[in-house]
Length: 316
Image (cartoon, rainbow, N blue to C red; front, side):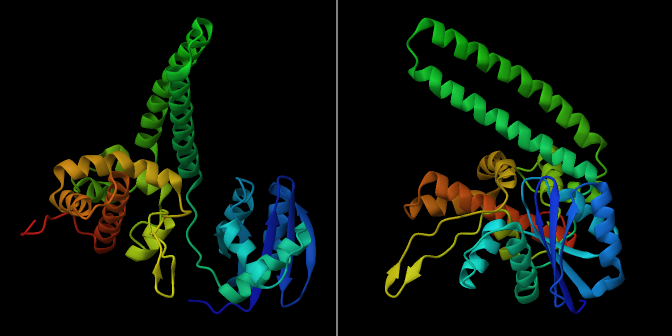
């Protein structure tokens, strides 16, 4: 791993990139467009492997700059905004402007040295947005069905029913588009085949995981669980043992794993045994399913890392 000696923080907004460099202390602004990103790469490229660039995952505004930097071979880490804000508060930096945020990001890069992970390709980014859009439509349809259950006025019920029918048509059309897109997306089919050897994981789930979680197979079990937001966090103090809850992570990955986990509970002996054991221990149904999702993800990660298909344990 390269030893970084220069650290750059970039506060990203729709139109502007605020850039702060350490140890020089330079601050400058660029437009958040192709010309600005090209200028950014030109200015940082002489630093080569000695520079670490950090920016927040702010909406989708970070993508152009991050892609340009990664394409030039520069180390760029895209981090959770809440993590950076907590870091700023720990440093006593409570004020918040674009210039201050850029400086905080540079300090965060220097002191925390966040891991640099490969960015998804442009095609995978489009596919991920399509999957996210599907989740949004599903949520809208569920909300409308809930409203229908409590609506009494005939005209209101009719309007809700029309909306539900429209959303159903849009979901069907989007499912067809996603299916065609996934078939044409350049995914390593051997990796997808490995994932599909796990009972409960089909082709669509395998491709969705490889698109939305490209780090799968390159991290430890704990890291991949935390990245997906499936790792329970402790809340203990003294003799008090608080409840464990999951937090953060990629909701789109959890959505992709939910139905496969239900299927695995029925057909995979390891996941079924875990689910039954948790229910017998008094855990809630949804808590048990979440634990099964995490177990599945850890196993799938290990399968890709070792390049070995699923084999059920002899005593399962």
